[in-house]
Image (tube, rainbow, N blue to C red; front, side, top):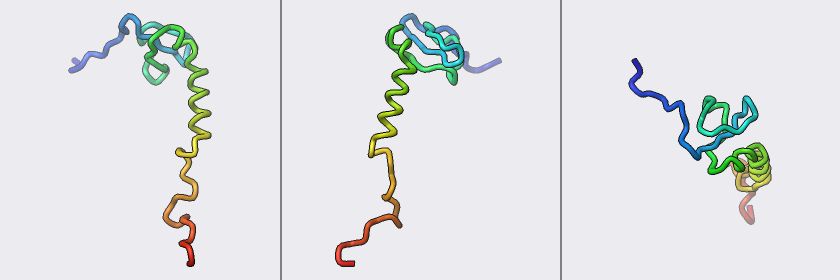
Length: 81
């Protein structure tokens, strides 16, 4: 017998987007690896893929996330060196 019982039914008002079925669901019906959420509304969950694309684009173009040229051997030479 399992020590901890997993919650299989979501709470009312918890919305998820299922990546496997490409549908919005209230409460977690599918496994966590196959869903985004929770979202506060059905509308937010319906736009989950669009939100993910926008965030990915922001992260890919954010200079704070790119460490090019900041390694110990990649430091610019000191002035006068």
